[in-house]
Length: 299
Image (cartoon, rainbow, N blue to C red; front, side, top):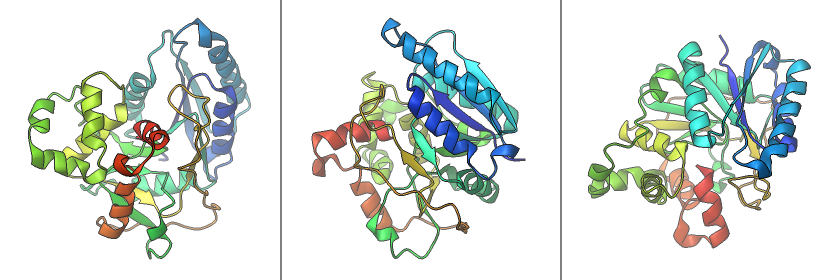
């Protein structure tokens, strides 16, 4: 059975339509169930934009080439974190696995093929936490001989996982004080990037509201990894000042794979050369203020 695709949309009609149209161009779209979660307006300033998105989604659903399309419209504003945690939990309870895309991501034609094959290949691997569709344009990947690499840090820019992983997450981060007072645990968490512990602290302090940093914290506690593609299946089009949680930048833009090459999956361990470059992408000490803003939204 193919994994269902879940798309979360809010107030950007053009971005949402581009995301949906690219997904519908995927090779497996006509065999896939699609769920679209529409959050409600946070205030009257975005009411019209939210209604425009819902109209676009309704029209897409009527004319879609997906196997089935289900549209879920929130009666009240939930925010991205609550929307994803709640929506993903609902779908995983029924299907056991999930592919998630937000409304500012465009996909290669083989995105669903890559995700479903990876979900099948790694489901029984106790070291794999999730699958990422996005990959940084790392220089070290140019001569890397494999199609995938591993990282102890997940990514929210197009991802997939299974019910038994997702239900492990302690969304309340109830052991935070024990964690932050243990230098070894902090060091271990920051193997995914030097910003990790800082973001989790900001989350617990209520300065940010991120589902993903909590998701990555549990991944670290479980000593598990995320599978990344050498060739990205995702490109973010939302870093253009149009979104609630993004700023204008092309710093992390990447070139999508053509969708014509097969991906060979393997059971690998993280490679230190790749991880050094991967971590540097999150190193605030080397980045200007604009990149810092982006990174706090990237995860």
